[in-house]
Amino acid sequence: MKKEKNKKNLVIFTSIIIYALLYFFLIVKYIPNYSLILSGLFTVCLMFVSYLFYGFQTYSMNEVRKKVIVRVAIGVFLYFSTIYLLGFLTGYLKNAYSLNILSILKNLFIPFVSIVSLEIFRYIFINSNKESIKKVSLCTIFIILLDIIINYHFMGGNLLKIFVYLTVVIIPIIVKNIVLSYLSYQVGWEPCLVYVLPTSLFIYFVPLIPDVGNYLTCIIGIILPIFIFISASRCINEYLSGKESKHKRLRLILLDIPLLIIVFMFVALISKYFNYQLIGVDTSAISPTVDRGDAALVYKKIKLEDLKEGDIIAYQSGKYIIIDRVYSTNDGAVQIKTEIEKSNDEENVKTRNLSEEEFIGKYKFRVRYVAYPTIWVKDYLEGDPNEVR
Image (cartoon, rainbow, N blue to C red; front, top):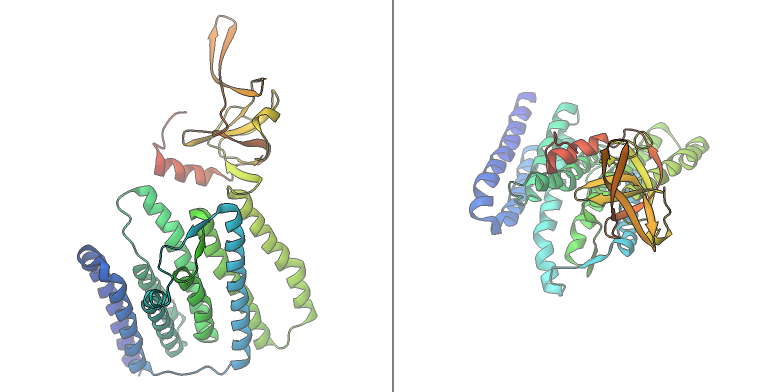
């Protein structure tokens, strides 16, 4: 029986690998317009094959499943609330898809079928191999590969574009599918669909889409599944261990809510859409007050004419963010040093006016060294890492 199941698993995994190779080397290259249809057909076939191999069993934890569905729905509601509220700060994009009823149904059909088929396949396979965490993990890895295929679009050879695709698309897909496999393993496929369907399909029928940018898209795409995992796992653990205690409710208030607030504050500070911004310092002219690799908090809601001589500021120079002091102010013009020439015992300081386009904000305080990973990645992707500044 075990050998027979292993053979069936091998057939399924091999078919996913073969389709992935066909997709990347043939479909994308020669018939890209049919890639979505072919991926949808493949997921439907995968679902039916898994049903023929393993059958369809149901879980018995109906009570906890309903609670998990409610918590997942709350997470999805918070997701949409967050991105649409952020849209007031970042702006909205008009939906590129036609919004008449027939067009919406046409655009929704294939993605809807693909998502439902994939989640039912996940449920059937995981439910049939629950005794082996290794097989469940392998299933998750292959579903991640399939999900990446379904969401794949050619990025070209630009290293920066590939990096953006990796962070905005692939990393959230990985985190999402780990959580979906956990939900499917514990309570079934229904919570997975409550999570995936609205977050994946809303772009086909809403008139306005929040333009939150790559950074916030990546962060929110990671935070949402983590939030759902924490909320659902606690619900499941409470069900397995007995009724929820006052101590657990108190922990939710005293620990989880402040932690969630801290996470969103950190996201807000790193983004560019609020009055305060946490930035990675590429170059500092005032070391050791602020050094390269530090994260500096700057206040952005200040005008150039309000700055005084000696104020520490952050500004953009080309692709680098520089921390320096205001050298002088004259009739609202802010001057910064560009070069210091030494002749004998005298110093000749060359300056220029700082433009509003370059100015980021006024420095408040720093966090030592935490921005180094960001700086290294940026140097590698955008310039020579050995460049002397």
